[in-house]
Length: 318
Image (cartoon, rainbow, N blue to C red):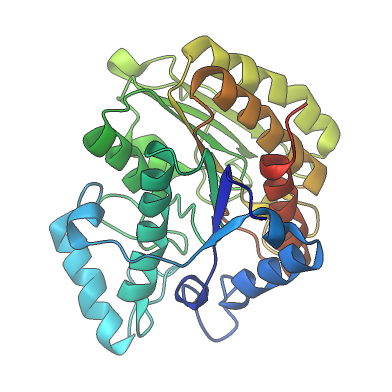
C-alpha cells in the first residue's frame, strides 16, 4: 500500500530535463535514482505521481515574461546558450523545464489540500536561475517558483528554504535577500573554491531581512564530521523562526566522489537532514515538507543520497 503521507514524482517528462553530449547534468540522472528506489522497495511505500507541466502564469510568479519567451524560442531549435556558457539550450527544453516547475507546484497543491504531508521530486531544485536569466544548468528556478506559489496561492508567508547542495543556492538567496519571511539556510562548499563564488557567512539578508539568512560555507573535503558540527546550527535557526512550510534542496553533489565538487558528505548526512526537517515540519508546519533533488553528477551518489532522503520521509516517526 502506498504511504498516505508521501508522494514522489517520476516519469519521462522529468527525465527529459537533461543536457546532451556528455554534459554532467544528463538525462540519466532520473533513471539512476528510480532504479535504486525500486531496488530498495521504496516505490511501494510512496504514492507515485506523473510529472505535470506548469502553466506560463505559474512560471511568471518568479521569472520575467521576456526570459520565459527566450527559453521558449531557444527550445525550438536547441542552439546556443541561455547564459554565458553553462546552460546550453536543447530541443524541448521549455517543455522539460516546465514539467520540473509544474511537478513542484502540483506537489504543493497536494500537500496544501491535505492529500499528502510530504513530497519528493528528484529532477527539481534548480537553484541557480535568476528571475531574468539561466545559470548553472538551471533554466527555471522551481525553488523560487515554489516560494512565490505558496504565498500567492495559499497565503503561506514564512517559508523555510534549506539547501545542502555543494553549490550555494544563489538564485534563491539573492532573489529573496531582502525578504524577511523567507528563512534561508544553506550549507555549501566555500565559494572561494567553487561555483558560483557566493554564500559567505556575512551574507545574512538585507534591510528588514537582516538575520533571516544563514550561509554556512565549509572547506573542500568536508565530511560527515563537519556536517554533524554545523547541522545543529541550522536546526536551531529554523526553530527560532518557526516556519510554516519546509523546502529542502538536497543536492547529491555534496556527497564524496562527485566529479565537479570537492565535498565528502555521505548519504547518511542527507538522511539526517531530511529526518530533522521532517520533525521540524511536524512541529511547526503541520508536517508540510517538499524535498527537491538538486545537483549531483555521480549516479551512485544520486541513487543512494536521494533514496536516503526518501527513506527518512517515509519511515515511521520515532
